[in-house]
Image (cartoon, rainbow, N blue to C red):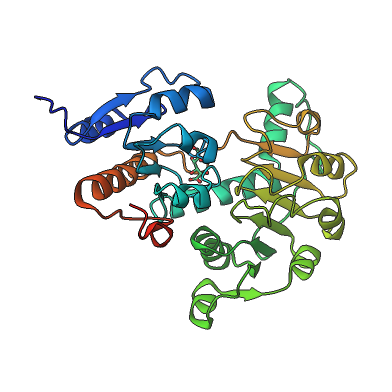
Amino acid sequence: MATSPSRPRILITRAIFPEVAQRLSQHFEVESNTDDADWSADEVARRLQDKAGALTFGLERINAELLAKCPALKICANMTVGYNNFDLDAMSVCGVLGTNAPDVLTETTADFGFALLMATARRVTESEHFLRAGKWTRWNYEMFSGAEVHGSTLGIIGMGRIGQAIARRGALGFGMKVIYHNRSRLDAATETACRASYVSKPELLQSADHVMLVVPYSAASHHSIGAAELALMRPSATLINIARGGVVDDAALATALRDKRIAAAGLDVYEGEPKLHPDLLTVPNVVLTPHIASATAGTRRAMAMLAVDNLIGYLVHGKAVTPLNAAGLQGRI
Ligand code: 8YV
């Protein structure tokens, strides 16, 4: 296709489906990280300095320092629902729109929350390691005895779209009693649809058999599950984190798991990932996955295409689909 120098320039900071770059190249001059190299913050800033937009992956820190080096930048489109990599205040001050990718991953991520809950409660990976190590030589009545899932109490912290999708699975699919805690209580119709009851955080921690974390990361949610909260949980309880690393104090969790303060945990996200707190690797009663809750080809494609819709919508037609700080931008662009 013939290129025009007037077309806006776009940076794709990680490798992505070829059709995503192809679609973007119909409207923009595209620079892609096709090798999926680990660009440093300086490298991202250097490559972004002449770009109007970026397709980002929730990993790049878009803050005042970077923005000062990127005067042409108008939009950063995350292909993730989480956007704790954006300093939205700094972006607003610089007239840069941030967008995320909600909704398209809700059901897939809720499925994975349940996969992790089931694997943790029923000790799926722990027993597989035992089998693969050649240790399964005889049957025993209490071998890998786990926790009941059906009919148990599911406590959900963070009752946004994904939390609600998990509540529906628990109540309708597994006959669970669902309790939740959220910054604000849901309206009565939504509570009824999810068959979920609002409780305080301490009550949830004390009464849930399974605690599922689906809360966004923020200064307020940092280490919101630490030693004190783990001490409130039942010794038979499980903790599932599909939210963000840093919501749980991983060091305190590893200690609680080692001391059997709680029965088990299932984790998809970690403080400082892809590095893990080393103690998490030494306790057997934890299921560990590498941040894959939204990882199906269809969902990841839909997430990337929503980010593309945002870039085209904003830079070509003047309106993004899922803007985060549009109000804060008024008068600045
Ligand atoms: C992503 C996520 O897969 O959307 C989010 O916020 O956490 C996941 O869906 C993950 O961020 C990988 O980039």
